[in-house]
Length: 91
Image 1 (tube, rainbow, N blue to C red):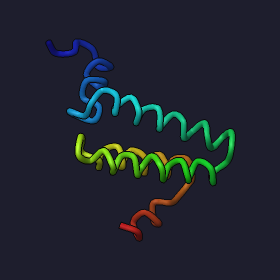
Image 2 (image 1 turned 120 degrees about the vertical axis):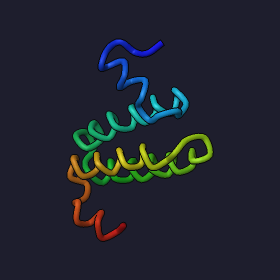
Image 3 (image 1 turned 90 degrees about the vertical axis):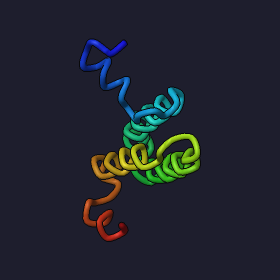
Image 4 (image 1 turned 135 degrees about the vertical axis):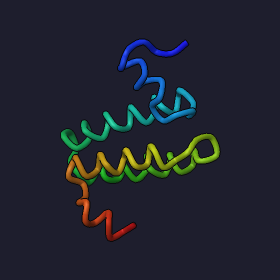
């Protein structure tokens, strides 16, 4: 049965065929990073982001790691942890 609402469709399609627990973990990571920047500063949030990115890479056997990794990188730019030019240079 197909989702009947936009939010239902976005939820069903978020990260494709990845396990539900992994989708929830990535969602928690995205919310937690914003809170970490406010509560503890950019250094703590940066180290947490590195750990989260490694977790996404470890999960490569179960799901495609580029989607959540890309979301974490986009969030790092939005939170001011890096710049788009730095990401361009590194890739």
